[in-house]
Image (cartoon, rainbow, N blue to C red; front, side, top):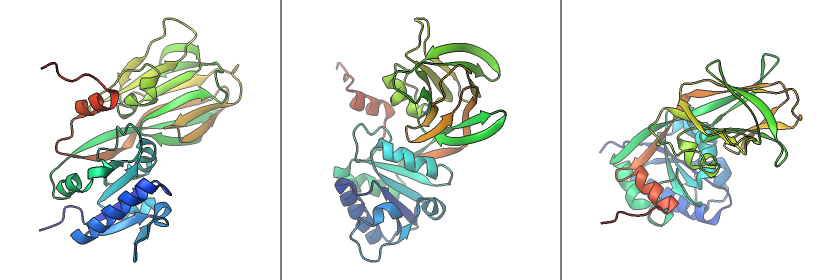
Length: 293
């Protein structure tokens, strides 16, 4: 039978006992099935397997048909930002806490993985966003985010002032601790903690969630996913401002800078088991009630 995924990359949280055990078990299983297996360099040093094939994360993106990421959502986000630039499917095995992006349980990873490898799976595209910082009209820094881009001060509980424009139209000015611009994927992460709405993954939308605004009338707002969001920082702000991408990558921002946030041309292709149900995930992770009858 022709293999749907001939080359598979294994990525995981380095020096994590649970992740190491799962990667070892999955590696041995894939080799038995006749797949070519590439193990990401940072985790390979902790895997006790002879003749292991080691590659950088970007090379896995180029060479592999499928990537299996073992870890929590945080580690998944880091890998996803890189892999979204390549035509590769991504599966998550949860070795963290909530695990909204990691479908498979490490306790029963082989049965659902076998079905996926046999073609019994679902695929979906998740869009990601790019954050760009401009100073005097020149691009100073940029990065991508799967979940959210957050404008905030470098100090805790330090209010900042900025203006928000949507596709060139002025929307509002605000004094607050910052602003969260979230994708549907990130709507169950930091945005939800700040009181933002949950957006189903198939929506082409972005949510803007103010962080502790200095007004009682400020509310989250959802805009079209193809909108260009521009934030202009007031000159009166302190100098230690930041834009955080998925809580991992920090872009420095100065008073007077402009921050542009928009959809990236690349997408993340997630692979799910056939029985994957987004609303079941929400009920399970958020402890929502079951049916009455």
